[in-house]
Length: 130
Ligand code: THU
Image 1 (cartoon, rainbow, N blue to C red):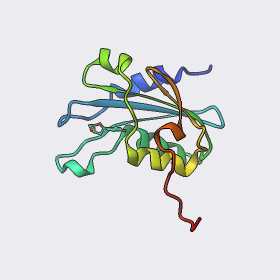
Image 2: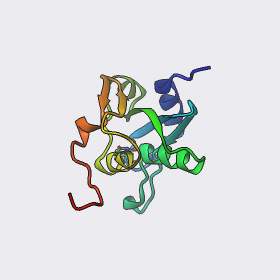
Image 3: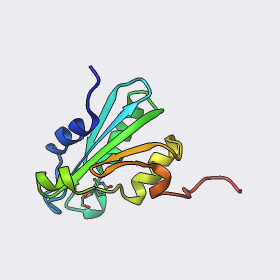
Image 4: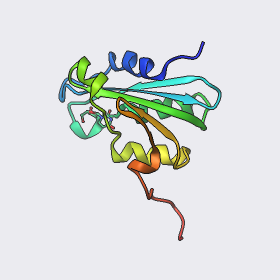
């Protein structure tokens, strides 16, 4: 069965731990194998330790041995209706982590359509001189 990525992101968003912001995020990442990895945001009383949903999904995949990805769906918002209708954009830190593993044309699925990674992070940091 091919799992719907947006449905998977909405499902994992229900597990978000966001008592401070009230902003719940879910991300679902499809690996080259077809397997789906999910993540939600996990906040902390020490605010800077909050972990984003997108990076959580990437870490799940890498820990499972998968480092090539097909696409990611992201949903987020305080209310369920917002999460379905208002695009939740990935933060800069998550974009840089995606750029570590994904090509610039990697498709990111938001509630307003599909966006290539390069649209949000046109020039990712690279550890090289050129
Ligand atoms: N958050 C994510 O999970 N992903 C993002 O790309 C941006 C923000 C979370 C972090 C925090 O728990 C909440 O959203 C509000 O910033």
